[in-house]
Length: 572
Ligand SMILES: [Zn+2]
Ligand SMILES: [Zn+2]
Ligand SMILES: [Zn+2]
Ligand SMILES: [Zn+2]
Ligand SMILES: [Zn+2]
Ligand SMILES: [Zn+2]
Ligand SMILES: [Zn+2]
Ligand SMILES: [Zn+2]
Image 1 (tube, rainbow, N blue to C red):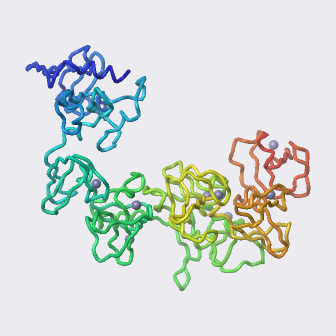
Image 2 (image 1 turned 135 degrees about the vertical axis):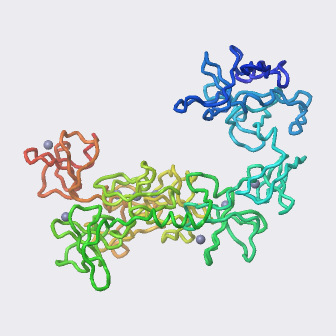
Image 3 (image 1 turned 90 degrees about the vertical axis):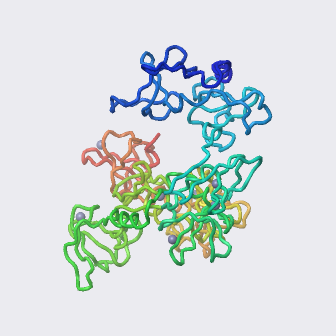
């Protein structure tokens, strides 16, 4: 329906007849809004008022045309483009009909063909009025239909680019991909580029590399390079982004690095960025109270704990203690609290409070939580989390995983692919938000499997069980739950006793939760807060299923209550 509507509005109006100017107040009638004339507003009178252009749907700015009766607005620029382009060179098949200006198809239009939403030339989604052919689905945006003859932006390229219309396709020197019909050339540099590539940022900071990277039209002094994002070859005589620091050898395709604007930031000057970065780095230690002769901080105030923490390198008694920050066993050196049981590895104490993680270019902030579900491994965890953009919570184990890694369970290196939606080869679960992928063969791993402990104890076996990646058997069983086990997936095993078991059976459901934490969740049936414990004292009965509690439990904190349930019984 939107199709016909658009055509009828435009047919017969003819080029530029929409601008019947009234000299005194500048009024026009426009076919996009035929009910009333539109009045020119030259300057913004009410700054707080936010309105959007009904043509391109971008924020309204002056000069613009407005209908005061209907609150209908058009940027002056949007109102003044020709309604009709005869004999357009980009669409010779139906050139006798010409191209007509149409309003952008909106999501609530009744019938919208997906291909009508995107410009046939630059593939960008239409954000404003565009030109379409009335016989076929050919359509292009205004910028591609009426390209500027000269583009000049000294901050992006030192010379002006000149429009060169071509009959067919070309390869863009800036990004090494194909372009069609509309090209821009710089005759000083001898390059031909896409329109969009005339304004490529010279310097960017990409989340997955520590230094600024620079756009170059060719790379000398380098041998064969692969893009560190897609791991396909980068042609050295075409444009790419690369790091200038000696020894870095970091090169990426233009389109790979600029694909997601959450992952990079345009940098005007490298120096400036480095200074800003230094400033934004913040220690998690609030205050150093005492230092020793080696200038090590021996007594500190840390944001994660209300008491002072003291440096130590040995436990007073041989007890198994977990670090309250990362949930792994305490090892020298570490800090402890002299007033209550609280331990942190020295490396965990020294984690930056604010840092930039490769998953996003925006900053990640360190927080300390009793109970939070990690957005990456999807496990409830206690301790330190990096919060990215307020809604992404990353547990410390996930935060430690680099974007390009080697892992014991696979012979080739793996790299993170944000678009991967395949099943994890470790656990068989579908990945929805990207995963680590092998560039050489079909192999995918998610954060949860990558962060599984390499070994773990379980009472079923006197030896340490090892994480195992291959099983030759055709059918296998888990020795803990006695259910079937898919032999193609990862499992824990003891080669001496021939024990094998599901990872979740060996580790329990909540291996990274701290004992005693408040179950910060609404999915339990009790009115008071419940505390999590790995083991109950004695063998009390579960209030829900009536069986003895020998595994993870939730217990009410109120002394009068005596309410205990299995963790697994919490959401009946
Ligand atoms: Zn290009
Ligand atoms: Zn690439
Ligand atoms: Zn570098
Ligand atoms: Zn304490
Ligand atoms: Zn995690
Ligand atoms: Zn997995
Ligand atoms: Zn099992
Ligand atoms: Zn209670």
